[in-house]
Length: 202
Figure 1 (cartoon, one colour):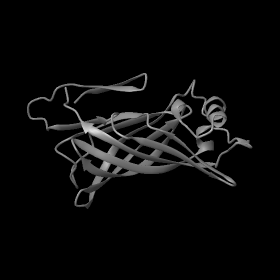
Figure 2 (cartoon, one colour; figure 1 turned 90 degrees about the horizontal axis):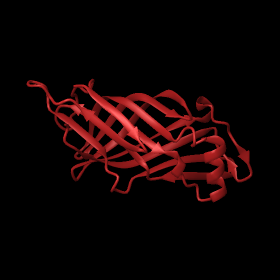
Figure 3 (cartoon, helix red, strand yellow; figure 1 turned 180 degrees about the vertical axis):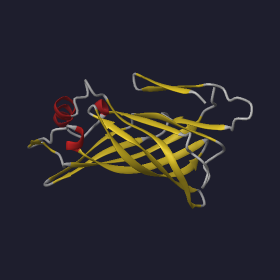
């Protein structure tokens, strides 16, 4: 199935060619922006721990076949998510401005992105799955390979997704600031908690 992705102003547009006779059914889910989504960037630096928080996450996940099932073939799956960095709130206005302007440079690099393929799905509870994905995380104009495992629970007409991973700032050409009000750890942890809702493939 041919598919295309366009990001316009933080909104994900996804197009798909209709299924041909004999092709399997497809599952397609978009981030449900009406829900209480949360993305947290966590820095544990000596004497200065803080978090940058935003709810502006968007994206989609697609696979062929029925619902999530352990042992199914996900080789044709697609997963893409992006987070709007200009909305990160650390709790201090001056720190927010320094983060955006001097280090993340959000005018030039407005999004953190993750694109991947689902590798496998494990059923880890009565209503819980662990989804393992392999892809690339991009921030500040640099992309690096990232393996990601997410806890996924059925919720309404979709799923709740929770996952976390760590990035090293120097891997993404991000200078590590040491200002009194902005001391960053070299390793930043990202934690995501968001909802996706099923949409009909066109």
